[in-house]
Image (cartoon, rainbow, N blue to C red; front, side):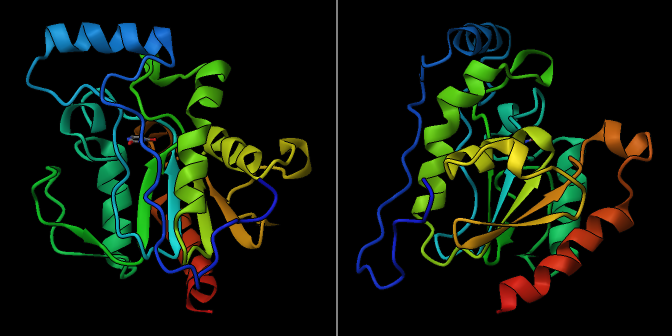
Length: 224
Ligand code: URA
């Protein structure tokens, strides 16, 4: 995709394409999911759908569900450390309302933003391989194409950044990943952040202030 195909004047926006609950596009991830289903039958254990309204101006692209987070609860970033920081920051910047209680039924609502993942299924060790990122990209592309008001995408981490760049038919070598770096691509702004993982915050790679700065930079873009 070099340009977004959906026009805001189109009367009925299409719904984003979703992977089926028992998606088998990635054999390794399907096998890993079967292990989790056996070990934790009460968990969600399926491709995690995106969260947020269809009129979102901002799409946040994470990496993949965490084992005890989104894979357990069924909502992106819900129930793990990365979600604690992400949802707090969204609430602080007026992009969410309600209370985040790490449960999909906590009533939290996103305002003008939507959260998805580059890979919808839980990968072993939180590390999807290239073929899995490629296999899941049509679902990311569908998200991007079916958000009529989209102005910006926030990529959390290099893998999400590169997958977003590829959805626009571009080569990642032309768009260097960098914290707070903005890229003009396909008629919108792609902005990068280090992933809000526990590892990145505990090692000091990403501070709360650095993460907040990304949203300060996004504000004028989303208001335009
Ligand atoms: N949870 C998600 O849904 N995505 C991530 O990238 C990390 C945690």
